[in-house]
Image 1 (tube, one colour):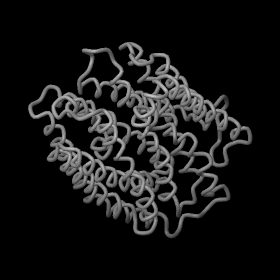
Image 2 (cartoon, rainbow, N blue to C red):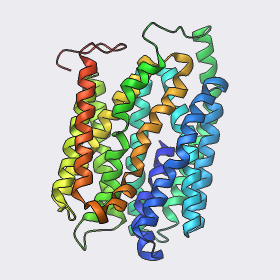
Image 3 (spheres, helix red, strand yellow):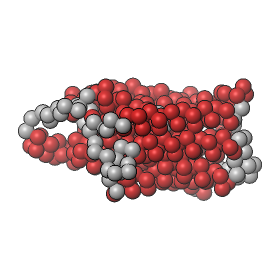
Length: 376
């Protein structure tokens, strides 16, 4: 959760950096997206490495890198500092997210995997909200949010380091050897099911948190509003994941997630260059719901279909697909002079509809690793 907090708090200080330091929207979008560049090797390498050396040996150093990157962001408010800090945070987050989710799956199977997604989303949501409030109301708005994140991360690292060894011993004692690979466990199948919904995960959230606040009317802005956007979007994601877990929704929820993403993109396209506050709030909720459903379904696809010995690698690969969406704000900013504000988002809505159709077609033959309740 604290890694998600640290990864996402940067969104809440973007308005402060623009106002106090005079940075352009393109630079700030690039810094926001730079996180994803370093995240990718962290996810790929961290997941695979954790399959070999153990989850804790990857998660804890990754969390340490997140702290180091946060220190850089706090100390150096210039283009180089922003880019380097975000790159280091991204690398550490990649190591932590992929291996950490696989670790949760090792400990609690599908329940652990789903809860990992919920806690990660909680960090993503609470981090910008609290940091946005601090940036707007507390002294030293470019220092205080980072100090709190660093303190929480260090506390989490200490707790995890103290408890990881007993957890590892319990796993070895309970397993007594390698976890068997079942007939439906196949890497290609896991990716074929999880990656299409994965690409919609952070595309929905990045649009809500980074792009939409810049399209609000003049006078309706500030870092707290970015935090509110994060709370609405990611809070909706937490809520729908919680309901889906309580009601044991089947793999058809992935179709619903893609359709919800299409609806959210359509709402944003409808708004155009300026989005009214009520439509802003509605769009955040709809896109956040899509985020929650797509994240849950993709993680469950990996959990139920991946060979146990490759779960870390495939979890990391899934997260790589999700984080492609973090480049969406920069892409929209770059396309705006030639394509306007509506057309690119309408194309995204069409792509989400195609994902929904593809998953629906997959479900006609049943899900290889999950039973679908009636009506799902």
